[in-house]
Image (cartoon, rainbow, N blue to C red; front, side):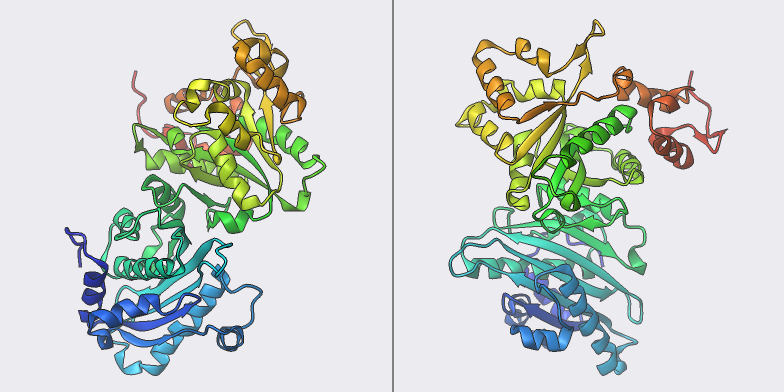
Length: 479
């Protein structure tokens, strides 16, 4: 069935599912009551949809059904729930296998506690068939709940659960599926910061692209995936970790980007308050770096992340355009652990431009409190000036207006800024836009500006419109 032109309410979605006799399954909900299943009971006709509902709220009961685990609100627990509940459908309802699309819905959720000292969040998943007797597929999301009342959080969860089931059962357009998850809600109430869709019917889906769509469609401010392309939940991947971040366009990754990472990582891991075994390096792309005027070339995005992943890097996509915002976001996750930011010196100049903070009540001082917090250090990579002299922190103060020089001295004297003195200055004349133009035109010589793995990936997969495939010209080059 095709997507609805008109946006349906939660009740209308639940009723349509109930009235579709070919869809039948189970609900297992832990931590926030039977909020999703309740929506199907309230609209009537639930006997056409629900085989079973349950909530193993006590840990001992939950362990007896799904096995013991260290944590109960985590993806591993959710997958165990789906595994257990889904197989029971065919076992107990063999007479329905030929004409029924089975599903198992599960969630494990932590809502606000009595003292309101925690962050409400949860894992929600659906295992489902696209046709009777067909293979199963999984759709898994992670939500962060921002309502200030536990009951409102439960109601929000119920809406998201119905939206998820409806999207998987009736919708085909992936972007519309993602956007529909917040039908009837706003990100002030609930945020979806991880989405994964996989299975035999969705082998064509690249979940890195789904991570981009979450941020682009404002379901979350940041999403993340690893070098293997598997999406990650940021709070879980970065919790109490020492995080080092390089922001860039990476179009393509050049020797400059690689050297920024290598030299800064060496400095960061030797900081006295950094635990090396708890260190995570992230390459970050903002929406600003992915397109102009809100238009994002998804093919170009995948080319860039293919390159970054080939170098073994984690990737974060964010809507935090200013550096202090990404630092503030990471600080809430890392819980006081050291954060390192890698920045070119010209980017640091923009950080010190007061016009950047005109819409902030506390101006530059308020934003610097986050950017240069007690757990943050910025590693500054040098640049070449137009006269081929080196531009470093030693020369930076002279470029600032008088009213900001004391502020600069303060952050410098308090070890918040550090020059990358062992940078490979021979690479500073590499300009990524020029390298990209050479690649697209098939001009010889671009290879010397990028790491070998980047060169190999571009040539093997024809990334960035490289006109050759395995040494053979794919099409005539214009001009």
